[in-house]
Amino acid sequence: MAAIEIDLYSDTTTRPTAAMRRAMAEAEVGNEQAHEDPTVNKLVEMAAELTGKEAAVFVPSGTMCNAIAYRVYCRQGDEVILDKTAHPIHAEAGGPAALSGAMLNTLDGIRGIFTGEQVEAAIRPYKRNRPRPKVVSVEQTSNSGGGSVWPLETLRGVSEAAHKHGLALHMDGARLMNAAVASGRKAREFTELCDSAWVDLSKGLGCPIGAVLCGSVDFIEEAWRWKHQFGGAMRQAGIIAAAGVYALENHVERLAEDHENARLLAQGLAQIPGIELDPPEIETNMVFFTVDGTGLTVQQLYDRLLAQGVRIGTGDGKRMRAVTHLDVTRAGIEKAVEAVRNAVAGRV
Ligand SMILES: *Cc1c(COP(=O)(O)O)cnc(C)c1O
Image (cartoon, rainbow, N blue to C red; front, side, top):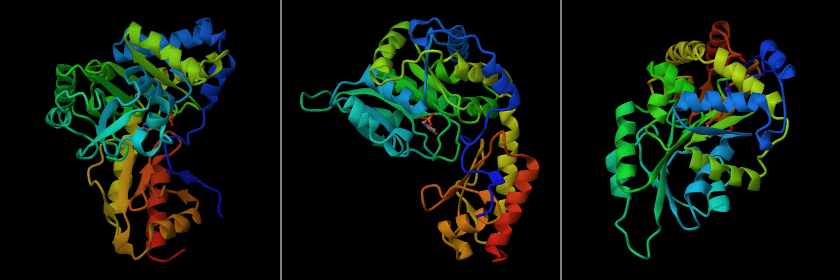
């Protein structure tokens, strides 16, 4: 197998840059769980400011942010309302059931995005024998939706519907900053409509680890309890928080390059016979496509690309998924398109 030269598998494949590593090496540190780590304290203040929330807590992963938030909102048998493609349903090892005992009530959104009317329709009138809906959960951007950005007005409708019925609104902000940059909005315009929201540092922002969960003082106080219980309370975590501080200061605006590269990739792929973009719109850093018309399976195309040093994920098995990030250049995108062209034409 050739070495992977251009890795479009995920925006989690980024490696810390030299400058980020320097910031990590030089970080001031202390005991995180006693709030004595100055770098963690700085990071959580930055994240709270970014999301317009009172408080924030540093957590090892986005998955743990979702787990903690659901645990704060739900007791066994309570219900989370979310899109059928949402990450906690497909990629968190059954966490909502295992850790919060939560029922999941799925909505049929378009590209991962649903409306306030759909939320209203999903909330059953109270009866003693029904699960109690507690939280609506949205994903900004929607991963399976193809990196789609929740429009502010749609999110407002969902927020109003949830709050009208006494439910909380939680945002999985794995790619919140991509949404902010692509829409030209401030992140807080979206998150101020939510009761809790988190930002992933280890996706497009390029950190090796970490996410920050934000909310009210009361919410974060409760979140700390579950962070301890789930084993996410840390010690000299400033070493990794420094990467987050560095990323929020230096890696946000550049996400526009990733979006431009994703569009370039999509344009190139769309010209290859048998490849269909699905969805056709490229809003942020993801490109999903089907390969049925090429006569190849997803796995065959994957193997033929790998043989040329290009990795593109096999996605959900029907669509391949390419994700741009800070370790992929424009020249890399051109090479990747060429590799797909070669693979489809059988020149591998
Ligand atoms: C990656 C991802 C997560 C989980 O984040 P980790 O930091 O990898 O645990 C949650 N939601 C979405 C939409 C994601 O893409």
